[in-house]
Image (cartoon, rainbow, N blue to C red; front, side, top):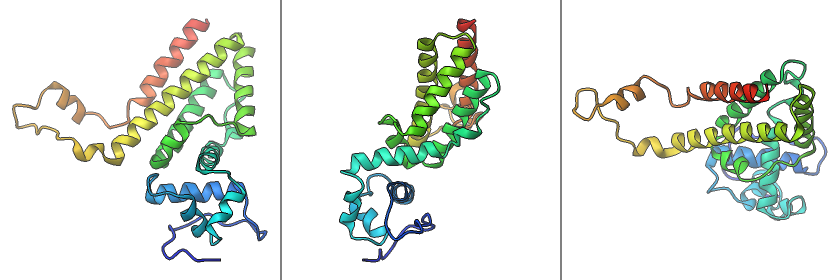
Length: 217
């Protein structure tokens, strides 16, 4: 075994048994991506970070794309779907799911691209999808429309998180905002100063849910 000379801080605790697990590797990969960015991540660095031969990772994941599937599943696990308000109105359930997903993705801005570019097909994700469609169907929404609603909400949430993450990871450094005492300080600049970077998510989510409620109605 080899030791990583500069591992990221606060790695997740390893499993108690002496062998690695797919879940642990995915969580450590996410920690590495958080610490160093997606471009600097590699399977070899993951193997070194967990203190095993770098090739040991390939015993659990065929390649990096398969590992990134596991990272997306690890992100989904953070939602805590079992504690969502399943007994309340479907709009409340959908709102809470989207809010949690948005918050989780923005806690891991380097990993948003991983989540956004692959379907999550873990048993927990599939079970959640079934439960959501069943919930909407029980409220009188045809199952096909229920799936369309779920897809729209997921795409809106992930798209928002991706846009915010890209901005926070570097776009702000390239922007040149005009100062209030200059001729270029127009109404758009004034509005930008009066708003936060991501304070429009709940407004958009509310409008979408109201629209769905009206159309399902």
